[in-house]
Picture (spheres, rainbow, N blue to C red):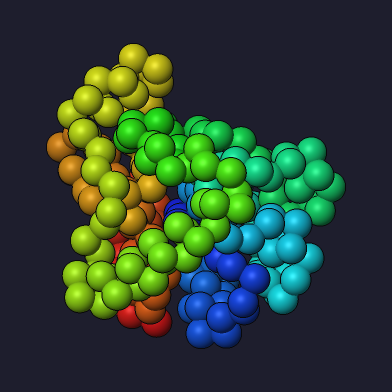
Length: 216
Protein backbone atom coordinates (compact mmCIF):
# COMPACT_ATOMS: atom_id res chain seq x y z
CA UNK A 1 0.00 0.00 0.00
CA UNK A 2 1.25 3.46 -0.90
CA UNK A 3 0.77 6.17 1.73
CA UNK A 4 0.90 9.85 0.83
CA UNK A 5 1.62 12.40 3.59
CA UNK A 6 0.94 16.06 2.82
CA UNK A 7 0.68 19.08 5.10
CA UNK A 8 0.61 22.85 5.46
CA UNK A 9 -1.48 23.78 2.45
CA UNK A 10 -3.07 26.68 4.37
CA UNK A 11 -6.08 26.83 2.05
CA UNK A 12 -8.21 29.96 1.90
CA UNK A 13 -11.65 30.50 0.36
CA UNK A 14 -10.16 31.39 -3.02
CA UNK A 15 -9.98 28.24 -5.18
CA UNK A 16 -6.65 27.49 -6.88
CA UNK A 17 -7.15 25.27 -9.93
CA UNK A 18 -3.42 24.76 -10.42
CA UNK A 19 -3.04 23.51 -6.85
CA UNK A 20 -6.12 21.31 -7.16
CA UNK A 21 -4.80 19.64 -10.32
CA UNK A 22 -1.46 19.01 -8.65
CA UNK A 23 -3.10 17.47 -5.57
CA UNK A 24 -5.41 15.38 -7.73
CA UNK A 25 -2.40 13.72 -9.37
CA UNK A 26 -0.73 13.06 -6.01
CA UNK A 27 -3.84 11.63 -4.38
CA UNK A 28 -4.83 9.44 -7.32
CA UNK A 29 -1.62 7.43 -6.98
CA UNK A 30 -2.03 6.58 -3.26
CA UNK A 31 -4.22 4.21 -1.29
CA UNK A 32 -3.88 6.05 2.02
CA UNK A 33 -3.67 9.84 2.36
CA UNK A 34 -2.58 11.55 5.57
CA UNK A 35 -3.11 15.30 5.88
CA UNK A 36 -0.64 16.22 8.60
CA UNK A 37 -2.12 19.48 9.79
CA UNK A 38 -2.79 23.04 8.65
CA UNK A 39 -4.86 22.05 5.66
CA UNK A 40 -6.73 25.33 6.23
CA UNK A 41 -5.41 28.83 6.87
CA UNK A 42 -7.44 29.12 10.03
CA UNK A 43 -6.40 32.72 10.69
CA UNK A 44 -7.91 33.89 7.41
CA UNK A 45 -10.82 31.54 6.76
CA UNK A 46 -13.46 29.65 8.68
CA UNK A 47 -13.31 25.90 8.22
CA UNK A 48 -17.06 25.70 7.52
CA UNK A 49 -16.63 28.04 4.53
CA UNK A 50 -13.72 26.03 3.15
CA UNK A 51 -15.54 22.72 3.43
CA UNK A 52 -18.76 24.03 1.87
CA UNK A 53 -17.18 26.10 -0.88
CA UNK A 54 -15.33 25.55 -4.14
CA UNK A 55 -12.78 23.23 -2.54
CA UNK A 56 -15.46 20.52 -2.32
CA UNK A 57 -13.86 18.89 -5.38
CA UNK A 58 -10.83 18.19 -3.21
CA UNK A 59 -12.93 16.62 -0.46
CA UNK A 60 -14.40 14.24 -3.06
CA UNK A 61 -10.87 13.02 -3.81
CA UNK A 62 -10.11 12.48 -0.13
CA UNK A 63 -13.37 10.63 0.48
CA UNK A 64 -12.49 8.02 -2.16
CA UNK A 65 -9.31 7.06 -0.28
CA UNK A 66 -8.50 6.08 3.27
CA UNK A 67 -7.85 9.66 4.34
CA UNK A 68 -6.63 10.75 7.77
CA UNK A 69 -6.85 14.34 8.99
CA UNK A 70 -4.36 15.28 11.72
CA UNK A 71 -5.11 18.66 13.24
CA UNK A 72 -2.41 21.35 13.25
CA UNK A 73 -2.16 24.67 15.04
CA UNK A 74 -4.16 26.42 12.29
CA UNK A 75 -6.94 23.84 12.58
CA UNK A 76 -7.78 24.69 16.18
CA UNK A 77 -11.24 26.09 15.36
CA UNK A 78 -12.42 22.93 13.61
CA UNK A 79 -15.40 21.27 15.27
CA UNK A 80 -14.40 17.62 14.99
CA UNK A 81 -17.89 16.20 15.51
CA UNK A 82 -19.29 18.45 12.80
CA UNK A 83 -16.45 17.63 10.41
CA UNK A 84 -17.01 13.89 10.94
CA UNK A 85 -20.60 14.28 9.73
CA UNK A 86 -19.27 15.19 6.28
CA UNK A 87 -17.85 11.64 5.89
CA UNK A 88 -14.70 12.81 4.16
CA UNK A 89 -12.03 11.39 6.46
CA UNK A 90 -11.63 7.92 7.94
CA UNK A 91 -10.08 9.37 11.09
CA UNK A 92 -9.60 12.85 12.59
CA UNK A 93 -7.27 13.49 15.51
CA UNK A 94 -4.03 15.02 16.77
CA UNK A 95 -1.80 12.12 15.72
CA UNK A 96 -1.95 8.88 13.77
CA UNK A 97 -0.13 5.59 14.18
CA UNK A 98 -0.03 2.81 11.63
CA UNK A 99 2.11 -0.11 10.55
CA UNK A 100 3.73 -0.28 7.12
CA UNK A 101 5.19 -3.70 6.56
CA UNK A 102 7.22 -4.15 9.77
CA UNK A 103 7.63 -0.42 10.46
CA UNK A 104 5.59 1.34 13.14
CA UNK A 105 4.96 4.89 11.94
CA UNK A 106 3.92 7.84 14.11
CA UNK A 107 2.60 11.01 12.41
CA UNK A 108 1.75 14.33 14.04
CA UNK A 109 1.86 17.98 13.00
CA UNK A 110 4.71 18.91 15.35
CA UNK A 111 3.72 22.34 16.65
CA UNK A 112 4.05 21.13 20.24
CA UNK A 113 7.81 21.12 19.67
CA UNK A 114 8.00 24.84 18.82
CA UNK A 115 7.17 28.04 20.64
CA UNK A 116 3.85 29.45 19.43
CA UNK A 117 3.91 33.10 18.46
CA UNK A 118 2.22 35.28 21.09
CA UNK A 119 0.32 36.92 18.21
CA UNK A 120 -1.77 33.75 17.88
CA UNK A 121 -3.46 34.67 21.15
CA UNK A 122 -4.87 37.88 19.65
CA UNK A 123 -8.61 38.14 18.96
CA UNK A 124 -9.46 37.00 15.44
CA UNK A 125 -10.33 40.55 14.37
CA UNK A 126 -6.76 41.64 15.16
CA UNK A 127 -5.07 38.41 14.08
CA UNK A 128 -6.51 38.46 10.57
CA UNK A 129 -4.59 41.52 9.27
CA UNK A 130 -1.40 40.15 10.82
CA UNK A 131 -2.00 36.85 9.04
CA UNK A 132 -2.49 38.63 5.72
CA UNK A 133 0.83 40.43 6.11
CA UNK A 134 2.59 37.19 7.06
CA UNK A 135 1.11 35.39 4.05
CA UNK A 136 2.34 38.08 1.67
CA UNK A 137 5.77 37.98 3.30
CA UNK A 138 5.92 34.17 3.10
CA UNK A 139 4.85 34.15 -0.56
CA UNK A 140 7.76 36.46 -1.41
CA UNK A 141 10.33 34.59 0.67
CA UNK A 142 9.24 31.23 -0.75
CA UNK A 143 10.04 32.46 -4.26
CA UNK A 144 13.53 33.46 -3.14
CA UNK A 145 14.29 30.55 -0.80
CA UNK A 146 11.89 27.69 -1.59
CA UNK A 147 11.76 24.87 0.96
CA UNK A 148 13.62 27.00 3.49
CA UNK A 149 10.90 26.85 6.13
CA UNK A 150 9.74 29.25 8.82
CA UNK A 151 9.62 27.42 12.16
CA UNK A 152 12.51 25.62 13.82
CA UNK A 153 12.32 22.29 15.58
CA UNK A 154 15.04 20.87 17.80
CA UNK A 155 15.03 17.39 16.30
CA UNK A 156 17.30 15.95 18.97
CA UNK A 157 14.93 17.13 21.69
CA UNK A 158 12.02 15.92 19.61
CA UNK A 159 13.52 12.46 19.26
CA UNK A 160 13.91 12.14 23.03
CA UNK A 161 10.35 13.33 23.60
CA UNK A 162 8.96 11.00 20.95
CA UNK A 163 10.79 7.99 22.35
CA UNK A 164 9.31 8.84 25.72
CA UNK A 165 5.72 9.17 24.47
CA UNK A 166 5.85 6.67 21.59
CA UNK A 167 8.48 4.07 22.56
CA UNK A 168 7.29 1.53 20.02
CA UNK A 169 7.46 3.80 16.97
CA UNK A 170 10.19 3.20 14.40
CA UNK A 171 9.55 6.23 12.21
CA UNK A 172 8.42 9.77 13.12
CA UNK A 173 6.85 12.08 10.55
CA UNK A 174 6.22 15.76 11.31
CA UNK A 175 5.28 18.92 9.44
CA UNK A 176 4.68 22.50 10.71
CA UNK A 177 8.13 23.92 9.82
CA UNK A 178 7.31 24.14 6.07
CA UNK A 179 10.80 22.73 5.51
CA UNK A 180 11.32 19.17 4.21
CA UNK A 181 13.71 17.21 6.38
CA UNK A 182 15.06 13.67 6.59
CA UNK A 183 17.34 12.04 9.14
CA UNK A 184 17.75 8.49 7.88
CA UNK A 185 19.68 7.40 10.97
CA UNK A 186 17.20 8.74 13.52
CA UNK A 187 14.20 7.94 11.27
CA UNK A 188 12.72 11.45 11.63
CA UNK A 189 11.11 13.13 8.62
CA UNK A 190 9.27 16.36 7.83
CA UNK A 191 6.90 16.76 4.90
CA UNK A 192 7.51 20.43 4.26
CA UNK A 193 4.56 22.30 2.73
CA UNK A 194 2.53 22.75 -0.47
CA UNK A 195 1.87 26.38 -1.30
CA UNK A 196 2.93 29.35 -3.44
CA UNK A 197 3.88 27.08 -6.35
CA UNK A 198 6.33 24.87 -4.44
CA UNK A 199 5.52 21.46 -3.00
CA UNK A 200 7.23 18.89 -0.83
CA UNK A 201 5.61 15.74 0.48
CA UNK A 202 6.33 12.22 1.70
CA UNK A 203 5.46 8.82 0.34
CA UNK A 204 5.77 5.51 2.16
CA UNK A 205 5.88 2.50 -0.10
CA UNK A 206 7.66 -0.86 -0.22
CA UNK A 207 9.26 -0.26 3.17
CA UNK A 208 10.78 3.08 2.14
CA UNK A 209 10.09 6.64 3.29
CA UNK A 210 10.82 9.19 0.57
CA UNK A 211 10.65 12.99 0.41
CA UNK A 212 9.60 14.55 -2.89
CA UNK A 213 9.87 18.12 -4.16
CA UNK A 214 8.25 19.76 -7.17
CA UNK A 215 6.98 23.03 -8.58
CA UNK A 216 3.34 23.24 -9.59
